[in-house]
Image 1: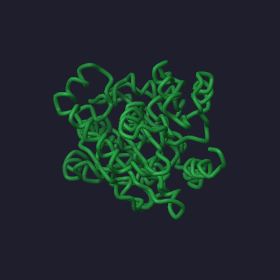
Image 2: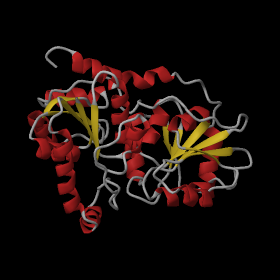
Image 3: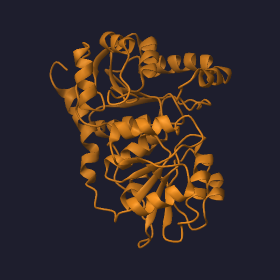
Amino acid sequence: MIGLVSNGYGEDAIAAAMAQAWAGQADVVAVALVGDGTHYTRVGVRPSATFPVLPSGGFVRSWRQLVGDVSAGLIGLVFRQRDAIRQALAGVDQVVVVGDVWALVVTRWALGRSVWFLPTAKSHRFMRHSWLECWLMRRWCERVFPRDPETADDLRAAGVSAAYVGSPVMTVSPPVDTVPVGPRYIGILPGSRDEAYANLEKIIAHLADCLGEYQVLIGAPPQLDARRLRAIAPPSAVWTQDIATVIEQSGVVIGMAGTANEQAALYGRTVLVFPGTGPQTTAKRFREQAQLIGPRIQCVADDAAAVCAAVAQYWELPSPIDWSVSGLFAQRIVCYNSQPGK
């Protein structure tokens, strides 16, 4: 039996891809620490526990955000998360934690045993793990699977049992939706947190002068309020809950997301970014994404004329995508688990 713990919407998607890869080989039990675990249910795994999203959306980068989360019940929530992990995963054979070091800490606190860890929140291309995080990984992790080879090399040099087996971000399931053929689509990824509503409104306002030449294809995560989103977007907008459909059909993407931005860029689409309204859409956050992914993430000025000019500059006829690579990371993790002595 395999236990999965994840703490974020993108992290849930990565863990759900691994659950799919384990299907038929092992029973999977999942705990989603942030949100409703939609990605798990899509692959037939019902999370044993889910939890509400705090004001920071799990993306704490300042004392103000931390204080806001504490005021909203963070301390009690952490104890409930610990108890849920302990109850759901006490008897599993292998535990895999997907997310940041905080998810590792809570899981270790709950179970008191070593785990496999996919540290998705940091890369040594832009934000190195601290000495404390490395120390915790040395003590608490059987294996660590970082998101890029540079991070794996640095963690091994720090004594962490780390191996790079591919990018966990490239775990997008092939497209399931169809959209009208013909239009030149600008893909919009507004994000999965509450800030998505204001960010979508900002994107649409910036595109007002160039929508005559393009049509927007909006990737709206299912946990957002569809009615509220539709009240913001133009009536001609095309909607999908499927990130792969946005990636496949769009000639350029405007992204206010975390993992989804990175997925679109890694699958070959240029993603235009500019500061939004929440903690995940700051200029600093997008500069980090550009450092991590490279020139497919393009930071543009927070200005309607600049955004329309960038759309015209970077829009390209969508090229075919080899979706077969999307399952490789999860398959390698499963194969790694079956190797003797691992």
